[in-house]
Image (cartoon, rainbow, N blue to C red; front, side, top):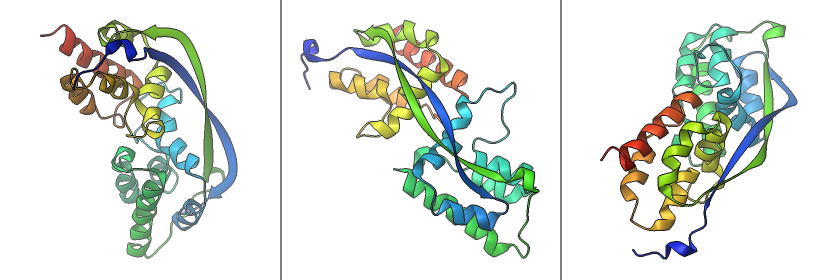
Length: 223
C-alpha cells in the first residue's frame, strides 16, 4: 500500500493526569463488592485496574489491580486475590466485558466458600472513579524515526496516555504509536508488530518506557 506522506499528520505529544473522584460506594465483603460492581460506572473499573500505575509509590505493588490487593490485605483471602490478579484488562474489548469477568471470579469464590469474610470498617473497599485531564506538550514529531529519541524522554504519564489510555480512545483499540504508524501503510509493519508484543499491564510505566525505547532502537538503529 502506497501513501503520500505529505498527507500524514505529525504525532502530537501529549501528557495527562488521572484525577480520582470518590463515588461513595463501599464494600466490606466479597458479596458487597460483587453487588456494587454490578452498578458502578465503567470509570471505576478503569481506575481500579489502571490507576495504580499513576499512583506515587516507593515500592512495586504486590498486585496490579486494587480488587486483588484489597482481597489479600483487607479480607486476607489469598485465593481470590490471585484469581483477580491474573485478570488482564487488555484481554477484554471494553469495560463491560471486563466487569463481567471480575464478577464471575467473585461469584465463583462465593459459591466455593462456606464463610464470607468481612474486613474491618476502616478497611472497606472504596470505589473510586476517574477523570483524565489532557495536556498538549507542544511537541510535534514529523517522522517515526524521531520517536527513537523522544520516547526515553517522555514522562510516565505521557506513556500512560499514548500507550494505555489510547486503547479506549482509538476505534481499533490500539495505542497511539501503532495508530500513527499505520498511516504509513505497510512501511512500518515490522515496528507495529514489535510494539504489539509489549504487554502494557504487567509492568510499571518506567518499565514500559524502557521496553518501548528498546523496541524503537532495535528497529531503527539495531539493524
